Length: 181
Image (cartoon, rainbow, N blue to C red; front, side, top):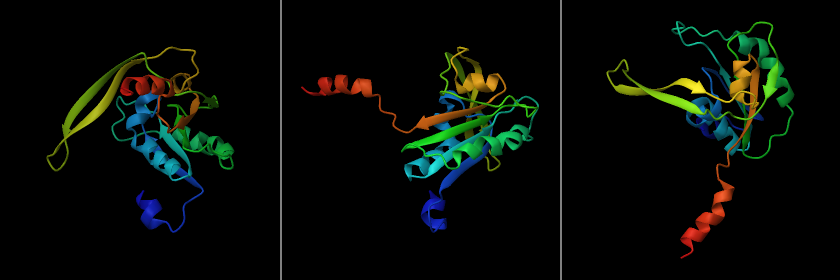
């Protein structure tokens, strides 16, 4: 928002947010800063893409291998450069852990985990202030449903279109009836 309203004299044709360190898959997109920046771009009428690099968190410390993003980034973004985006939509791209020879990419829906144990990790920042970090462990999902979760699990780059209209249309009539009294 700062760049669009104060730094840039004109809005860009394309907004790339990321490459983020860590996955933004399934319903995790609802609390992702990377996806939020792309959402702001989409709300401003700019074609927007969120990019994230999945990595194995165990033993990684501060080093994250961005090999898959480097190997696949240009190839996955190129077809989107002149593609029209529907109003109030964005594309969410996640690169798999391994850069290897690669399996290509899969387009699919944002996955919804069947079981997700969310962990809240408390810490202290360098100034002595408490913070809370959301962690995910034990995510189960149903294989074979062509979602971003399965694409990444199978070593593919996931490419997922997201829409910003969160309204559950099927519930509108029911709510109208309940408040009509």
